[in-house]
Every structure is written in structure tokens, then in C-alpha cells.
Length: 566
Image (cartoon, rainbow, N blue to C red; front, side, top):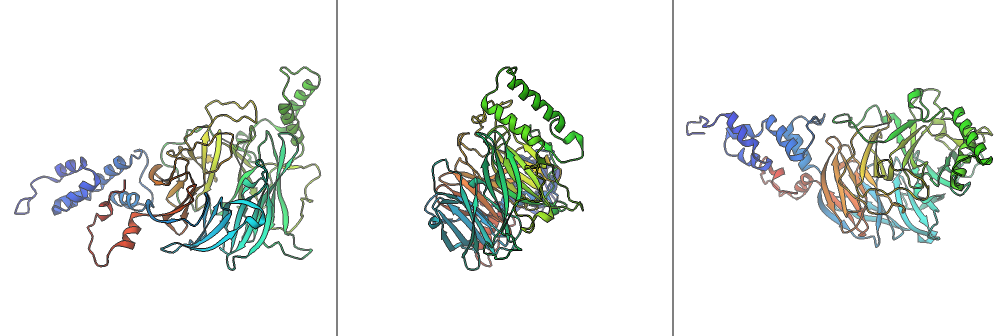
């Protein structure tokens, strides 16, 4: 601009020059004069900067809540919790899990040191209480969850025992007095357990039927086990589900279907998912969605197969394991209770868990509707209301991910299910249930819409895992309104944007990152837990500046970009 105030270059030429600059240079150039400042805030300029800097697919539109491209660029740069602000070293062994209270004022941690620690989440995090579970014969603690009103804490652990022992226990701790209120057996231990209501929780039990056949029973337990009344049950059977090929039910969680109609974020933009995941709607009215042949046809086919085996006409002769599975399938054909529908059509809750049908490694997600009358321990204790021929309960939906599931998490609105999976090779066939297929080191983070029962996004990728396919392991993830985070075995935690499907940050630890947790009231705060025995607290650059900035010190309008964090 010359001395008279007339621009020496037209806006269009300045715009073209600015297109060749990076975001920080554009903002710095905007301080030169009024003309350059106006051009530096141009919406088309920042749209190009956004797609180029974050490498977002061009067919993905701007976030529906965003008002400008400039502010959206600033949001992704400045509000991601990627600055380490505190390291907690009170645990003496691997930290396995983290969970926040619904208020965000407290969180709990579980560890191989066999303690459950409860923390106060102030600007500086401090330890409130540490519960040592070794006196109860626990080997270690592995999972925790606050109930809805944050008055009780569910803590899940593993019993001491042989190397191949699968027994565990769930403890309920009062958050007022930190007293241990009750303990519930839980088998296998990686059912973990979860709250169904404010005072009732779900646990599991496993009954062996054959070498590779079993049934899982899911129980509803009253958190206060000292109730003394013949009219009040402290435990009630929810479901009994058949397991084939050495599979079991694990990792139970509950989704509240009533919240589906007001989602935090609609994940419909961009290319549709191209994953080979198969979703079987086992209780729907649409015949195209029903999995497999009609029950009568399947039953007749199994009978013919067994007849050929008994007569020696089956070629080649099936192994004992194959024969056991076929007999178990035939038994279940006429002894499985079909999915029950609500008489009023009202939305209820979904019980979600990992399972399988081909091998013991979890490769399917089972979904079972919980109706309102099932959400109380009142009524028949051991399923007396069930018909004598109905041994098992059928699932409502099954999601096959064609890989080893190592983590699951729900979005805050409970509509979207995020799943960490390590894929099997394309076309892999399971010939022996005790020898699952090899699994990829790269973890796929899959997203399913529980309202439509469809996969809605291409898999998020960046994190890796190295544990072999024949070992049990779990990488916990967490979802906030705008972000999803996960641990990994490559010594990092990861954060992605849910709308744009891009990785925004890597959070460094010295060993495997087992668990992550967003504050439910402040998604700019994230906790990570690691095998290095530490818990790290991470805040966004924006909140760090707010806490650390000197008073009355003026800041440039682009100060959020001044400190490079990449």
C-alpha cells in the first residue's frame, strides 16, 4: 500500500500469494496492513489452508457446528489435548484402565499393583483414596466404572490362581465413605462388568458343556448385597447364551437407546465404509437382513449331516471338534428363545459385548436388547418364567468384524460404537477353533451406528499393536463430542477428529498405552495410562495458555498458532 492509502497490489493477487504460504505465515502477513489483514481472514483462503494442512478429503464438508473455516482451523489446532501438564506416579505397576465420574470431578485408575485409586480432578490432580484388593485374593484390578449419580464405583479384578484361570470378581465401593459395599463373582474376568441402573450391575458366569462348547450367563446384581427381605432379590438371571468353538462373552457394556434421536454428531459425510464387516439383524422384520437359512431348513441340514456321520457316509470324516459344534448347533435349534420385543415399542437399552462363532478370539459383537421389565432384580430369580424347552436366549444383532477385537467404546450420545480391531487376512478361513488366523499389527478403529446397525465410516488408522493372536489383551478407547482417543502398543496414545476422520495428535509414553479417558465435562482434558506405571494428564494449548498467561498481557489475534506443537 502506498503512502496515500491506495493498494499497490489488488486483493486477488495478494490472495494468490497467500495461497502459497503456510497458516502461520498468512497470519503474520496479516499484521502488515489493513488490506493484508482483510485478505488473511478470507474464508476461501482458510478453506484451502484447512484441507491442505490437515489433509482432509475434499468431499468431507465443514463440521456442522462450525461458523467459519478460520475458526475451524483454530479449533483443531488449539483445542486438542496434546500438551502434557502432569504425570502421576502413585501406582507401582502397569496402569490398565481409567474412568471418569459423570461430573468430571473425580476419576479412578486400576493397575497390576492390585489397587483401585480414586483421584480428585482439580487444576492439579490429587489422590483421594487407594483401595488395596490383595486381602480379597485379587491378583490385579483391571476396570472401573462410576454409576450414573457418581455415588458408587464398580471395580473389576482378576483372582489369584493358575496361569490359565479365568475367574474374577466385581467390587462395589461407596464414594462417600470409600467403604466396600459388596463383591460379585465374575467369570471370565474379561466380562469386566458394567452398571445397568444406578444400583444394579451386570456380571457374567461361564459353564462348560463340552471341550469347545459352553454357555455364558449374564446376571443382574443389586449393588447392596446385604438386603434382607424375601420379597427383594439381590441377583437375577438376565440372559443365557450358547458359545461355540471355544468362544465366550466378554467386555459387556450398556447403550441407552433413548438418546439416539439427539446425536452429538451425525457421521454421514465422506465416502461410505468399504469394510467387509457383516451385520446380521437376527430379530428384524426385513427378510433380507436375517442371517442364514430358515431355522427349519438349518435343523434339517444338521440332522442329515449327523445321519451321514453315524452311518459312516460323511467324507472326509469330521474331527471331534467339528462334530461337537454341529451337535451343539442342533441342540440349540429348538431350544433357543427368540428375541423379545417391547409391547409398547418404547426404546430400551442395548447390552453390547464381544463374542465369536469360529474361534476363541473375539471377532464378533453381540447386541441384546434389554427391556424395561428386565432392568430390576424383581421377579423370577433363575429364569423360572422361561419355557422348559428354551435353554438359550437368541441375540438381536451380530456384527462380524473379521478380525480380533481389542477394544470398544461408546460415543457420549450412545449412538455410535467405536471398535478397535486387528484384521484377519482377507479370505482367512478358520479350520481349527483353537488356532485363530494371524492378525495385523495395524489397528483399525471401526465405527458403527447403533440406530441403523450399519458401519458408517472408513476405519481410522495410525495406532499399532504387537501382542500375538493367541494371547488376550485389551486396548481401551474413549469418545468425546468431537474426538476419539485410543491407546496402542507402540508407546503412544492417539487422538482423531470424529467428523474429519483424521489423526490430530500422538501422546508419548515409555511403554504400552493401555487406556485413555476424556473428561466428560471438558474434552480438552485427556488422561492416558501406561505399562510404564504412570498416568499422564494432557490439556489443549488453549487451556494451557489460559492457565499460564500473565494477567493484563495483550496477545496477538493469532497467538493460538504462535507456538508450534507438531
